[in-house]
Image (tube, rainbow, N blue to C red; front, side):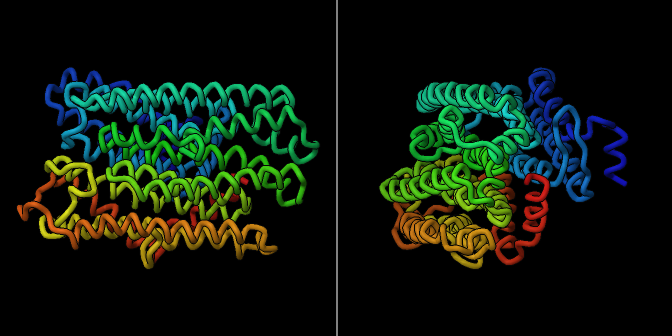
Length: 494
């Protein structure tokens, strides 16, 4: 019934329904701030638009609605990925009004940029052409550059935004060059046409150069090594809600691009054992192994918790890139599921960091000494989020990593043992990550702080942390809550 109502309201434009709410929100936010006077009014309207978009998306997902409008697709995959991005947006908007780091003077512009960036993510998830995917990625990227610079009274934000924009511009140039090379030889930008070209044609150097340029350009979006150097500076310099948005939302958009473009293009040739598909698989396997190793090893030496979480995010991207080496439907379902669990694990950790900054606690790991006595709930929550990121059972991170690593070992497409070495490297890196996560736990529970004064963070932060904590626990013991939809999504994509 609810799906019928949505279809009757939007008609042929039903695939754009969730995006339309975000577009309206982005357009009206500056005006709402101007006439609403109090920034709380702007926040309430922004939250309402996010909820409307999210509810619309959930209704379409649970009713298995399928449609296409002007090349924008609506199916289980697109609605599932849209739901992931909207969850991130909801958590960020929820805490932005009380965060001491986000701007209040330009709240309308801030929410408009958040909506614009998320709109780009939804557009990417629904697109089937390299050109429209590129447009969505750039909408998100340009909005993100401005969001990083909006932090109040902090020169680090301006520096980070400049670095982000410069490196982002270089990645855009590489991506465009790669797309033009591929179009020149294949004669199409539609992913299905490119998949047919790859399946029925031999490898050419022009296509290979275009492919490498695209991998490099979009590798920047997910902070894959060696395109990762912007991430620590940007995550440290930006307001914590924005850092959370980039780590859990923007990075997932980049991974969605890799899944939609490269996996959809090469899975048939990889299954057939062609040299074209096998070469691409090994390229991604090497990138995945290097990315997760560099991310985890460098994170060990980080004294700033936001920089540590940044390198942790780099490592997590390496884990998810395993699916592009294995290239099986089982691997893709596991990768999408890990994206969801990562949103709640990493998002919850950033929320705690942001809440503690509001309470006057610094960003260094040493500032967390004695946190267990000053705020038992925050210390326990942070410990669970970090242990989940490390893959400790029975938390969500363990379950999603188990599915992900198993896809490289025990699935029908990987039964020949080709990728066992990659799974071994991933498991070894998970063990390494436990060391630097344990440093934070040690500081909170074992080391003594300078004071035992109780810490109080804004109530909204506590609510958002509890939401993340619930899903980290529930998805660990009951993955079918989302994993079934992840398996359905692969059918539509592949």
